[in-house]
Every structure is written in structure tokens, then in C-alpha cells.
Image (cartoon, rainbow, N blue to C red):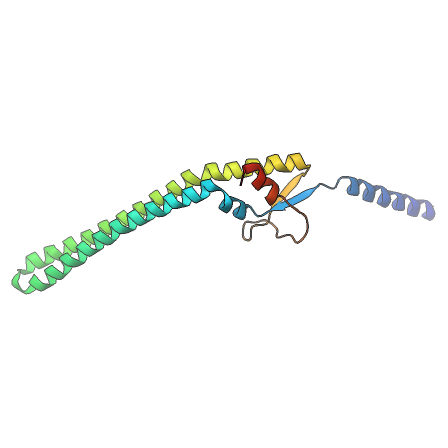
Amino acid sequence: MKQFTKALVAIALILGTTIAVQAQSKVAHIHTQNLVDAMPEYKAAQSEIQKLEASYGAEVNNMVEELNKTRERYNREAETQTDEENQRRIIEVQDTQASIQKYQQGAYQKLQEKNQELLTPILEKARTAIQKVAREKGYDFVLDSTPGAGGIIMADGYDLMPDVKSSLGI
């Protein structure tokens, strides 16, 4: 009976191993950030974001310069003004600082929204191209080897980058 049990366990192990080997999926990897970086649409989007960022930055710098000039003038004139006027000026400067800070926060939020608006279609195009090429090549899974992207950095495996770039005309 013990021999029969051992034989049954051995057959089960062999059968399980055979099924596992046959069920293995083909896996490839791609560094999606490098792919996206190589896409002309991404470069154009980055350029647009940088221009918008520079515009907001220049506006904030102008506001800060104007505030500094006003503050300096108020400091020079402080001795010739009444206490009430100096207090009103302090409040005005504080309000202007708060206004600048609010503008900076709004500009940052608008930059984030614009970034999302521009990048979403680019990332979707890259994802679609990766899926298309993976299906054409018979891969069941594609791992993202971009560091920090939650993928796995692989030393071996098929790299889809050349095929996907070719598919995108890059």
C-alpha cells in the first residue's frame, strides 16, 4: 500500500509539473518611460508645459517684485505716516502676499491639470501599441521595467522596445 501511495504521489508530481510547464506564459518586458520619452507627442507636450510653467513663473516673479517695491516704499515712508496708515499698509502687504500665494497654488493646479490633459492620450497610445505588439508577438504578459514604476527590472526576456518604436514610427 505504501508503494502504491508513493507511486500515486510521484505520478501526481510529474503530472503537475508537466501541466505547469505547458501552462507557462510568454513574458516580455519594456521600459515604458523610455518609450514615452522617445515619442514626439511627449516632447511636444513637455515643451508646452515648460512654456506654461515659465509664463506662470514670470507672472509670479513680477508680482513679487511689485510687492517688494511697495514694501520698500512703505518702509521708507513709515516714519512720515500715521500709525493707522502704517497698520493699513501692513495689512495690505499681508493681503498681497496671500494673493500671490493663492495665485501660485492656482497656477500649480492648472499646470497639473494641463500635464494630465496632455499626457493621458500619449500614455494611452503607448499602452495600446505595447498591447498590439505583444499580441502580434504572442506574449501573454508585458512587465514594465521602468525603475520605480512597480514593474520588475529584468536581465533576461524579450524587450519589446524596438518593435513598439517601429510600430509607432519612432
